[in-house]
Length: 261
Ligand SMILES: [Zn+2]
Image: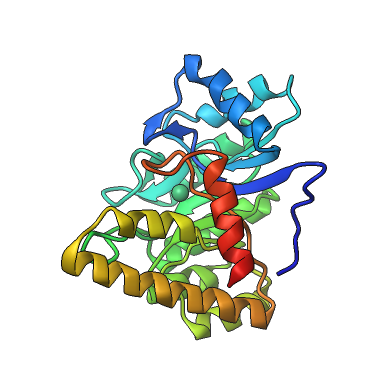
């Protein structure tokens, strides 16, 4: 895999949460967070959103350091579905327009949209996500403002829907398919597979649930391998900040896995 992360000038972690062990970063933890990133030579991070738009404040704070923070501010999720701690609920076209205008005005670097839930302990994808039409409107509104759309999405059909709607990046993409990878190659959509985070989750389980999750990890690795053969652009994103996923460290774990597949 092509190393787009130049070690000397610093690494880019393409999928970070401004959380510590699953809890939003407090003001007193900001210095520690900054120190960890500098220690690991991570000089650019992409914040995947928090309900209160912490990324906007932190981006300003980091201006005095050598770390560049790219933020979506807050993510957009379908009202009633997964995503409440990452962003704001959206229920119709009016909401979509209002939020994208607001994010644009506040200087969001990209739009993050949630188009599925997460993997449950039984290995299923939980509820969440938009209709194809809603997602298409989000992408249209974002692109009109020159903003790319990063899409949290797992489950084969939801990934295909996201690709049809025109998203620019697939985040996680568990239950990826060969068909979806071909579409990604064609549409130059990149993929942030967050494998290490999936492995960490599997490791918290036991018995049958663990076996199921380990199977999902293996399938995920096969798809990453195929994506490399096809020339789909892969991003190194750690999902750090989530519980059990440590900033800095997780980036290098993810990098190692991706390079060894
Ligand atoms: Zn994430």
